[in-house]
Image (cartoon, rainbow, N blue to C red):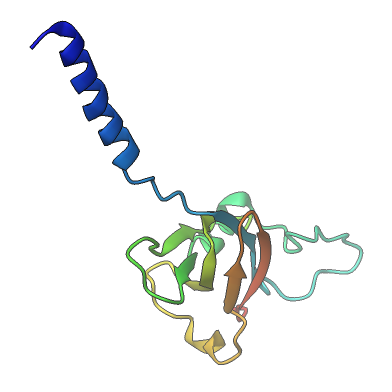
Length: 150
């Protein structure tokens, strides 16, 4: 086989390979972001104090991280899929979360860090939201963990 024929054969083989490769399935993405608020964290704020809206009790960062760190946000598809799995984030003192995920319908919920439900609030439907996420959409979610003061 001469050089020209080898080159043509190589061209045909490579053309066949590249033209018949499956396109990679790049999923359309969107963003679910928000904040979890845990409270109340203390009783009434003493008169004369101007409370910090995000930290009215004057707790230290370590205390707030410990309180919020008891919880996590889990985002899971409402319809099971091999392509999309649940994502989770253990909270820090900010309570903020961001998930960039493929479009679809998702359940966003707050659970205890060990994955168990927060029983006292489960009946109030304040710890779970269902979201329909479209391509390039940013959805804001606010969730509230009601905590009894000890």
